[in-house]
Amino acid sequence: MNKVTYVGLDVHKDTIVVALAEDGRSGEIRFFGTIANTCDSVVRLTKQLSAAGSTPRFCYEAGPYGYGLHRHITKLGFECAVVAPAMIPRKAADRVKTDRRDAEMLARLWRAGELTSIWTPDEEQEAVRDLIRTRKQPMDAVKVAKQQLLSFLLRHGLRYDNGSYWTKRHRGWLANLRRFRFPYQQLAFEELKRAVDQAEARVATLDQAIDEVVQDWRFAPVVDALRALRGVNTTIAATVVAEIGDITRFENP
Image (cartoon, rainbow, N blue to C red; front, side, top):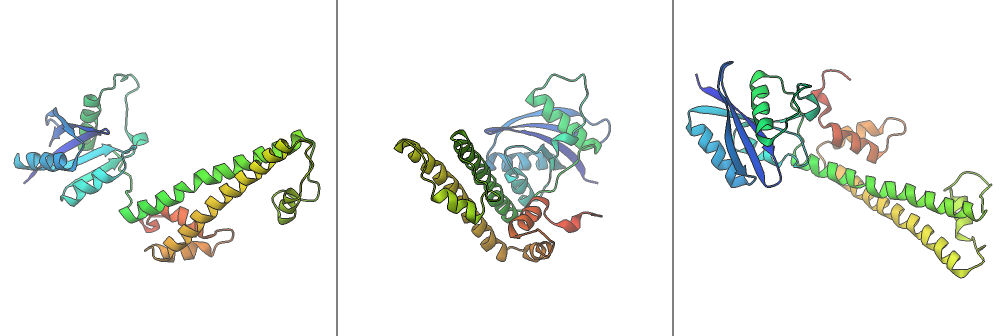
């Protein structure tokens, strides 16, 4: 029977710290070394571990470096789990943290079956997720720009009393507002209005891009089904699908 070597990877921008846990409860746990965080180095690592006569099974902690390493190792034909950081068991008294200790801990827990792997999106789904997450920044900018404009008007005693803010009527009131004594105050007001318009234009551009992407996406039928719910538009439905992925992987709602 082919033995398994459990490989813990502590991934960094330029390097990967590698630790091994040999199969079996009493198997040796040892530090393997540090390799460069490149495709060629990972290929050499898999070949070196496979040449020892065992099957390597890799795992690393989810973090800012994404899923590229997972996809690369998987394409090479090896199992690789991306581990949820919040689900890693840690001893309360264990406060010494080094790259080597982290890699050895991952290898040991991976062998013991105590790690919870997360669902990893494919490249297309991650691209859609990136597009949707990019939308958050201009959405925040819209909120900030609107608040700054309203605060400016409030400081100068200008109130809108004919209904809700940011309706068509309110925007018309803003467009015709010429009540500032000094021309540079009027200029400041116009710049604040322009900031709102520019942020909203960015959001509209991204919304249009999301609408176009969803049409050819393999999850388009799921997005269409979610849009049937009250209050759920294309952007909301696409966000749900992009973040959750294949809903059928859950056993219950």
